[in-house]
Image 1: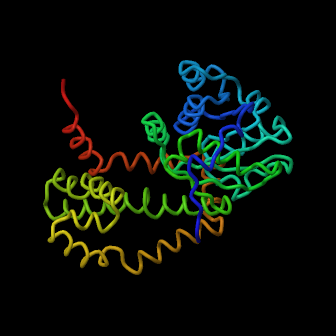
Image 2: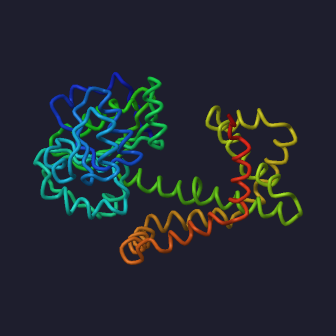
Image 3: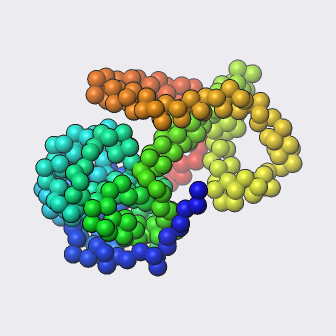
Length: 333
């Protein structure tokens, strides 16, 4: 599937002239995007809980109107749902649905709520996505350095006929068209690929691989600090090489011993059963099974399972050793 890459010359900030951009939420994504839009000369309204920590932070950052979510949604020509997936449906129903203007654009940075029909927007609005492929802090830092991070855009609903132009303009306001912005056919492509990457590789798969590698060395009698360096700390060094120049670059930087050992032993680790597991992860995303499980965890279990898993993860030997290792890299005055 070929995807067009858009750069600065393909996007027009003038599309946003005279429009109020209402950013709902002021966490990592909300703050980064609001500040970048502000610094791009756009008219930004921040919608948050009155007098809460985010309210005070947005006021402190300055240069933006700070108000409640319902008022921001009513004023916004572009209403950006930069809130955690699990709270979006209730925030939409409570503050946005009855305040959204006809002809406005409802924008998301991740397609979860639209893909799984947790939010069903009215027919008389644009529904768009502009998804920077980076955590909020990195987005902001890249913008301040005069560049940006790549982003995906998609159009779910084009009421005005200008939905794609608005999404591209938002990407430009974030600096994303400096790096490259990719248009995908629909929200589902972003939603399902993002969930799969998180579960099978970036968060789920990698964390388990690190943990079991660490445990294997410790069981063989190696000091935990040595096991941590080999199985966790050095992962970042390798990933940085892959990001910089791809797999061939990474292999070329490694020693011949590492090359041969890695290339001849990797299939012992990621086996056919592992690949079947990846397919099962994807199937649960595709079928909606994961969505149902996650909604039940939030709505009925009140995140009790998630909190228990996080608590257990924080008490492993891997993590207690990691605290010792990370302290070694702290510069002392």
